[in-house]
Amino acid sequence: MSLAEKTVVVIGGGIAGAGAALNLAQAGIKVELIEKDDFIGGHAARLTCKATDQCQACNGCLAEPKLRELLAHPLINIRRRSRVSLVKPQDRAFLVSLTQRPAYIDPKACTGCGLCLETCPEEGALRGPLLTGDSPLLALDPQRCLYFRDRHSTLCRDACPEEAIDFNREPAAQEIQAQALILATGFAPYPAREKERLGYGRLADVVTAMELEARLRAAGRPERPSDGELPRRVAFVQCVGSREIKGHNYCSRVCCGYALRLGRMLRHRFEAEVSVFYMDLQSFGHAYDEFLAAARDELNLVRAMPYDVWPGDNGGVELEYQPRSGAETVREPFDLLVLSVGMTPGADHPELAEALGLRPDVHGFLAQGAPGIFVAGAVAQPMDVAESLATAGRAASQTIRYLQEA
Image (cartoon, helix red, strand yellow):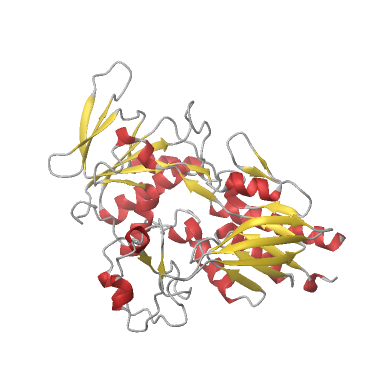
């Protein structure tokens, strides 16, 4: 069989999966891209530009062009709302079994008029794509939709003039024959609710850095959740869910970089006063010294971790911390608290490891396993967008060599 006659399954439609799929398709190989969500892009599609008066090299802008190229490539078939349930080796090939969640909103009938959005009482139950040009125009999340809790809430269906919404659609089983697989399912953000003392889920003006990025991308400004006003004093707390003896005892590598870049951007664009609370600063790159010097000049870097977070007098929060060893405890007010959450293995990693014969490391990230199965991106370890694309290129090259040997 020539390369053009072979098929590779890429599991994961984020930036690593997109990079791997494009590299394979450009070599003339058919790709079946498996994505569990309705939309492609993953976490990378939610990133915002962090430029000040100059580019900060955050790599967020690498994602969108790559994802648009993915959508347009004729050799890449995207299977949305799909999960791998079983993989059977078959003499240098694999039979991949999928379960596809139903599209409760018919993408062919939906016009994107938005009437269902206006009537839906549950935030996040209905949503659109992260990228212009992606499809469907709207999707329904059964984990958030009230109908799937009470079997009575049908406001969105009743409002749809095209009768595009059907709650009774059933999942579908599918099978794909492939000569190789690439796993690129990425990571899960650390669940900030587990840090109750830091106020997430308890105080309105405590958000994660990823939520701040998504808000900046969508609205263009860092609105405070409690009242929609611009925050004048912003605090970042580092290592939320990383570098813990009990828990995730590793550095997530990207958090310091994105917090400092976000902080500098808030300072330049919105004149915010930004403080960053940290244990130590981990970053890398060819201009690290210059970048850190600029951050120290523009931000208040506090080498201390807050003990507790309290509600502010007029919204916002108060942070309680010890500014230095032996000093008295300080309580300082901020309009917005941003938690720099770490990267953790995805919840489906154990299931995928078992299905694909991969080896989880001590933290739960996945390493390469059986012949013909390769890994790309943050499924293997914490990494940023540029590194994810680099590993995607490597996984695609390894896959092509493997296929050529058959």
